[in-house]
Image: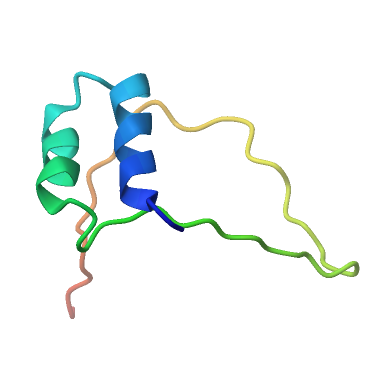
Length: 70
């Protein structure tokens, strides 16, 4: 997406101006490696959709990131 990094930076400044770390990372990168993409998807007419997620658990349960062998 042309100027994707700049659009991302503008968006961040608007919705999360206190997110200094990400704003600084985007400014420092100047679009060299980071960017913003636009993706269009199409669903098959016969696709079966899962139930809609209506809530997210509010309590965090700590679990190991990687599985270990028993």
